[in-house]
Amino acid sequence: MRNRKILIPLIIIVLVAILIKSQYPKLFIATGYGAKAMATAVFVCGRDPQVAQSVELNYSIVKYTKSEINFKNKSVTTSFWSLAKQTAVYREGYGCCLAGDSSEDSLQKYSITLPAVKQVGVWRTPWPMGDLRKDTIFPEIDTIKLKKVVYSAFGSPLVDKRWTAAVVVLYKGELIAEKYSEELGVTPDTRIWGWSMTKSIMNAMAGVLTKQRKLDVKSSAPVNQWLNDPRRNITINDLMHMSSGLKWDEDYGDVSSVTKMLYRSADCYKVAIEVPYQMKPGTEWKYSSGTSNILSGIMRNLIGNDKIYHEFPYREIFNKIGISTMVLETDAAGNFVGSSYSNATARDWARFGLLYYNDGVWKGDTILPNGWVNYTRTPAYGSKGEYGAQFWLNKSKTLPDAPEDLFFCDGHRGQRIFIIPSRNLVVVRLGYSETGFDHNQFLKEILSAIKQKK
Image (cartoon, rainbow, N blue to C red; front, side):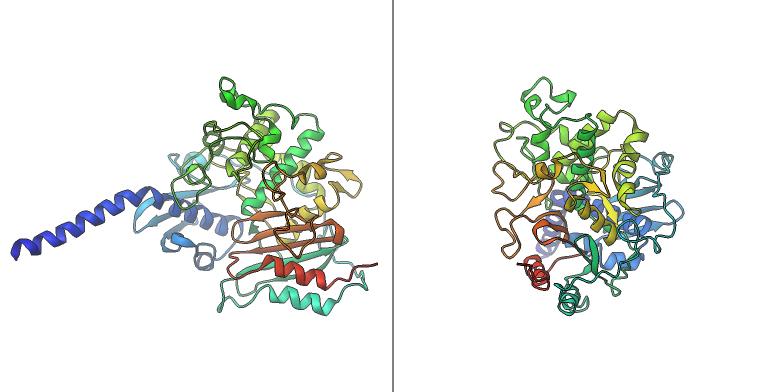
C-alpha cells in the first residue's frame, strides 16, 4: 500500500512531464501570437491592454497566456504559465515584431520616419481623400433598412462573440453608412488589424512594380536559393496565385510551415523560401501564407534599397489614395510580413477597396497598371474559382447570395473588404471574431437595401 501511494503520484508526474514536453513546442505558437497581438494592439492601435487581453487575445489557447507590458521600452513579453516566453518589440515606422534571439536593444536601434499624406484638415477635405462626407442622395437606397442591416452586424458583445469592430459601406465611391463598436473601444480613428488582407496589399505592391517594369509576373521567381533545383521553374504568377507547388503546411494548430514562419523565426522570407519542392508549379492551388512572404522578399530584393522598400507602399499606394493610418509591419529582419501584419482604420481599409473598385485608378492617377485588376480576378488553376491573385473570388458562388463578380480581401477573425463592381459597392467588415457572423447574409441584406435600376 505504501509503495502504491508513492508510485501513483510518481506516474502522474511522469505523465505530466511527458505531456508538457510533447506539447511544449506548440506553446510558442500561443505565446508568439499573444506577444505580437498585444504589442500591436497597444503600441500600434492604441488599445487599452485590459480590453486587448479580453478581446484581441481571447482566442484559442492564447486566452490562457499572460502578457507583461514594458511601456518604457515599448515591448511585450508573453508566457504560458511562465513557460515558452516570447517578446515582441515596437519599432517606429516598422510596427511590432517578435524579437526571437535578438535583444530588444538591438532591434530598437532601427526606426524610420515614413512619408506622410500631404493634406491639411482631413475633416474639411471631401471623401475619399479626406473624411468629409458629401450630402449625395441616392434615391435607390433604402437608408432606414441599410442602417438596420449595419447595426445588426454588431450584436451584443456581452451576449455573443460576433465582436464586429467596424462596418463601412461605399456606394458609387461615396461613404453611405458606417458604425463602430463603442463596447469594444473602437472609434473611426482606431486602427484595426487586417491579418491576411495584407496579402492583397502585396498584390498592389506587385502591381506598381509591374507598372514600373521592375517586375514581370510571367518571369521565373528571382530566388537564388532555387536556381539549382526544380523550384527554379516557379514563376511570379505561380506565387501570386498560390500555385507554386511548394510543400507548404498552413496548419495553425500545430508546429507547421506557417507557425514556424510567423512565431519562431526572425526572417519570414527565409523560412518560406526554404520549403521544399512538391509538385509541378501551376498544377494545384494551395492556400499558403508563405507565398505572400516570398513575394514580399522578392520585391525587397528587386527594389534593392531598404529605405525605398519600406517607404514604397506609402509613397506609391497609401499616400496617393488618402490612406494615412496604415501601418504595414515587418519581421525582425526587415521584411514586410506580407501574409499577415497590417493595421488601419476602417475608412482607410475602405479606401484600399475603392482603389480596386476603380480599376486601379484614383482621381485620374493610374496607381495600378491597365488590366491589373482583371489579372487579380483571374482564378488560380485548381481553386474552383475561389481564388485569384492574392484576392478571394466568388466565381464559384461561395457566397451564394452575392454576385459572381464579387472579389474580396479576407483576414483571420472576420476581416473583409468586399468589392462588388456590378452593384457599385465596397463593403468593409472588421472585427475581433466572426463567431456567429454570416457574411453571406450580411451582404444579402445590404444588397436588398439598394434597388437595382432596370
